[in-house]
Amino acid sequence: MGDLIQKLKASGFTDYESKVFIALLQGKLMSASEIAEDARIIRTDVYKILRTFVQKGFCNEIETNSILKYEVIEPDIILDKIEQKINSEKDKEVKNIKEIFKELKPLYKSKYNENGKVVNVELIRGYNQHREVKFINIFKKAKKEILFMTQPVYLVTDEVDNIAVKFIKNGGVIKSVYEASEDFKLITKDGYKQGTFKDLIHSIKGFEKYGEQVKLCNSKVPNITIFDREIVYMNIIDKTVPKHSETDIITRSKSFAESMVTVFDSFWEKSYKINDYKKQFNKILSHHENKK
Image (cartoon, rainbow, N blue to C red; front, side, top):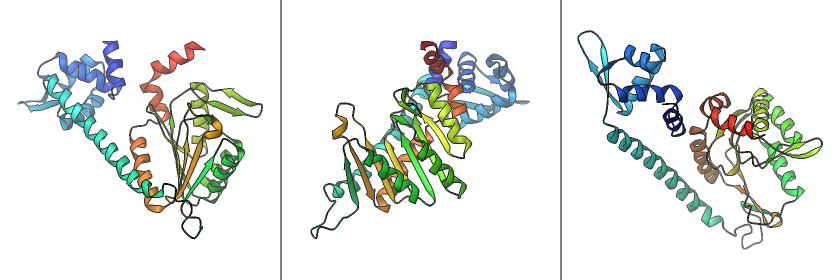
C-alpha cells in the first residue's frame, strides 16, 4: 500500500487523502469511524477529507437511521472526473498563454517607433553585468508588489536580498515561485558553488524570515518578474544557446503585466509552501540527500 500512497501523492493527493481513498476503495458502505480505523487517521481529519471527496464526486454520503455512511464511486468514473479536471485546467492555461501572446505579438521588434522614440519593449542581449544591474535598478524602483517566478540558475546576490528586506519593511509584498531543482549555482562570498535541494530550501527559508511569501513548484517555471503590475522582466534561458546569445526582455505595459499576473497565479496555485513541500515530497528530498 505504501507504494500506491506515494503514487497517489505524486498525482496530487495529500498523504491523508491517499489513505482515506484506499480505505474507501477496499470497503463498501463505511462510517467515518471505520474509514479512520482502516486509514489509521484520527476521525476529525477523516471528516474533512470525506467532505472534499463528496464535493468532488469521489464518494456518496448516505444517511442511515443513526449515522452517515460513505460509499466510493466506481474507480473508472473517478478517473474520468480527475481527467476532465486536468484537461480543463490545461485548456485554461493554454487559453491564458494564447491571450498573452496576442498581446505580445504587436510588441515584436517594436522597441522604436517611426520617429525613433523608445516605446514599451527593451531587449538586453548577452550574458553580462548590465543585465543584473538593469534588474536591480527596476527592483529598487518598485513600490508595492513584486511577483517572482524563477528557475534557480543562480541564487542569489546579497544586493537583491538587501533591497528585498528594505522593500518589505516599507510595506511592499514579494511573492515568489521557485522551481524545485538542483540545477543552479549558489552565489557565495567565495564565488559560485553547485547548489543542492538543501541549499535551495535553506535559502528560501531565509527569504521567508524577512517576509517574502515563497512556494516551490515541481513544474518547469519561467524566469519572469512582475513589478507593480506594470513592468515585466523576462529572462530567456536556453541551455542550447551560448550565454552571449541569451536575451532578456523588459516590457512596460499594464495590460501585458496583468496577463502575466494570471500566469503567476496559475503557478502559485499549484505550488507548495516549504513545509508542505517537504511533507509531500520527503521521499524525493531523501533520495537527493542520499546521493550526496
